[in-house]
Length: 359
Image 1: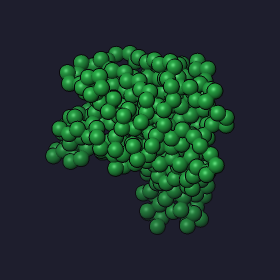
Image 2 (image 1 turned 180 degrees about the vertical axis):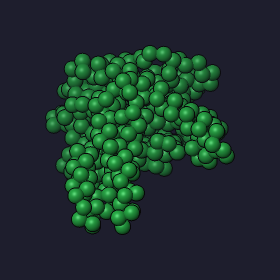
Image 3 (image 1 turned 90 degrees about the vertical axis):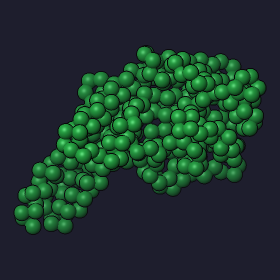
Image 4 (image 1 turned 60 degrees about the vertical axis):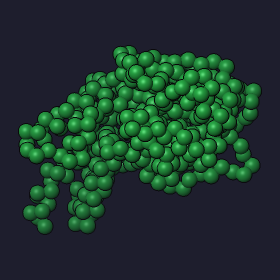
């Protein structure tokens, strides 16, 4: 046992230090360094390994158990962004805004499919009053367009589609907000460079109040086919493994830095918003990140309020975490948060009902 303890010490020290770095990830801008961002991405695994060491040292009555506990205490503060117990159901005497948000993956266009009808059917079952969609592919014209099809299928009369001019030759690629409530103002937050990302917003008349809705899609890592192949299959020799790893790290480093600039643009707009707000979308970042920390400041998280279980919204190979969010002002309370994996996309549809204190 003594030999095993000596061998375990370097690993114990590394995972303890890694967890402390992860705890700082939300507060460190990745444009300064991405070291903390990498640690934040590994947070769930680092927490589990430290839990193992806590049990391991405790069973031996070692003082190192106290060190592990002291490291884990601040880390546990963030665990609620990943894991929740006891979903909060909508009370029978309350009514609210049923919301659906989804990254539609261009309805499978690049996979040789058209899943628009399947997505619409899945959403229609939820009877949402507000829909936010990212990576929406609009084809056809006027009443035969995909936007109009969704409006009719979901019985949502007010729609705002904004096209992203990124050079795609087929259809119109962009973002969509559909609502049961009249949209009195609408706009776009443009991001620097031609990144394929943006944020749109709409002010809705909700009873006697105005509520602003943001639909956001932040910078993705943009893995290529060779990157996904490397993640799934690895490489045959050390040289290819090294090159594959470097490519992935470069893409992640670039994405974190670009996302930080995009977050600044959205945060400035949110801070100037005079109304209660709802912020939905694909952040392309884990909860233990500068992105989530910056955008959720002063807002509530529908999953943390009324979700249950280990939440995972991205269904692709990496990063397989919660990267899609529904945030809102304290003006609302969230109920019935859940995700739907049956929708044909590499993202799950996120759903919740927001109830205001007045209407």
